Image 1: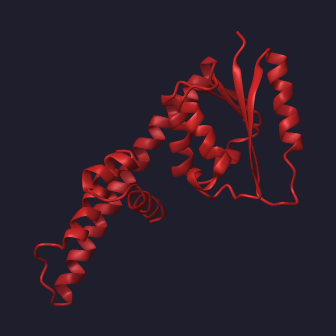
Image 2 (image 1 turned 180 degrees about the vertical axis):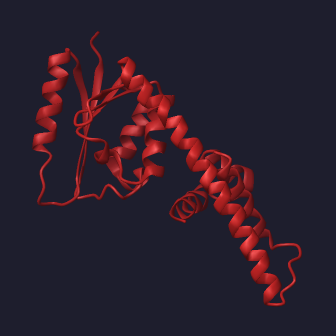
Image 3 (image 1 turned 90 degrees about the vertical axis):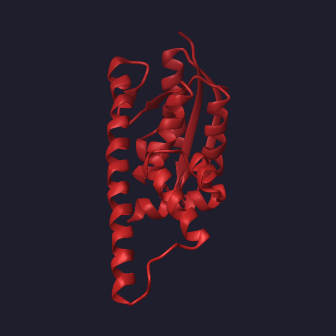
Amino acid sequence: MTKRVAIYLRVSTGEQTTANQRRELEAWAARCGHTVAEVYEDRAISGAKSSDQRPALSRLLKDAVRRRFDMVAVWAVDRLGRSLTDLLNTLQTLKESKVGLFLHQQGIDTSTAAGKAFFQMLGVFAEFERAIIVERVNAGIARAKAEGTKSGKAIGRPALKTRRVDAARAALAEGKSIRAAAMAAGISVGSAAALRKEMARR
């Protein structure tokens, strides 16, 4: 069945070229009888940057939610991201939008049985990541209490800002989206996103 394919290209430096990536992915689409709906390209942008720091990828994800294509084709998984947290968020957005994924180097096509299993494995990684974050948050709270006691500072009612930050961390640890955590804690989406990155780095 013919599908509308979005091609995503990325190189880390200005000296590199996306020409080979594009040629191979367009050739794959032609062999499968698919049509290339649009090409999204981030040039001279590190894969360590989050999706919201990569203009083309950010636009691609918004278009995926709007179902402007049926599948995304990428040269390799590290073109999408090198941070596990951000990569999982990107792949989850595609999955929830019912947009397929083709990874050329890994030979993964989520329209196949093996590819669908790959998407299912994402849930396992996401659960594992959430468990780690919960453990880190709890350890951080315990450490803060212990340090407060040692320094002679009373650990009483926390400041409003601190309570909101803790509420946002707890919501994120439970697996809520950045936007949902921000709304639940009464902080900005940007602040919640910064917290999410901080939690992932610990």
